[in-house]
Image (cartoon, rainbow, N blue to C red; front, side):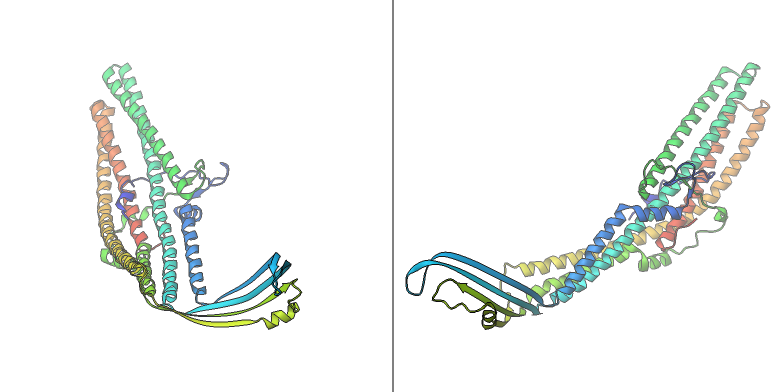
Length: 450
């Protein structure tokens, strides 16, 4: 699973909390926390329900394979009615009517079949465990997707706030430029430059509004709630960002993830099921010894006067038949089906073992990268904070000079752009740091909370 593609676009800033409604009217306002978003997704998402259905089918298969160890028991009743011209004992033909009833029960059990049924039960247990683990894996993947979408909303909210602030500043500058133009202290070029900045700022606001709407829609679809639902999300508390977060050891995180991460447990369960599949297939190479038994009786009636028709009860009692049999089936040649089955099962085992090792290798790479990314994010957060402070001071100095006519509009615009960019970079680094710390928690199986 490639986590870099899931986290590459996560950058953002904290904005004011606003109303949120999920399944309520606009008057009943509520804010969704990240934990609530995760719970809603796991409860409503159809992928989880599909996985649970598959899990239930695996359980049915397990119960059926256990029941196959018991003897089979079947009952049968056959009735026949015939009429027409039939030859009787005298050699003459006459119209007769005959009725025949046969009833019986039979049972059978495999005494030995190469342990195929025992191994099938073991395999079905492994498949049931794999099904349960697959459900956990889907939930785990959805959890990471929710975190990604949730934080994308936070980024877009703050980006919209910053864009609106930039628009207000641009409008103030334009107003000031027009006043200075009227006083004869500025030219039309200065006013045109300011109008261009306002237009750019308005476009940025529109883009930010659209991005925010799309991110809300994405999370709503993950939670499987109506796309038209209006809701808001709760921003995290970021006071702890001044503390060191990159304290994880990559190898320790990897070893811990090997024990509990669903992807690893799923691949391991699939390998175990494939191993047992080989044993099931090998069972078809062995002789099969079966024991069977039967018990039956019959009743016959004919209108032929030469036939003595005993009573129903008497015939059922007198016509009882019993039987017991022992059957040995030795496979000699069956179109190489048994050997081909063993080969297919062996190849499948090699494939699942390779898949399991690939899953472990990928997890190792992703975790080492995630720990390195976390350390880099912490350093970037510190450096962008310093850069923002410096650009803010530089803008303040230019602003003071601009207000007294010692700096032109180009210098003022450049300083404001640099400050705004530094602010966005800082906000981006802040949420990037938060997300990457939560990615480590995700691999460690910790609850994702803010």
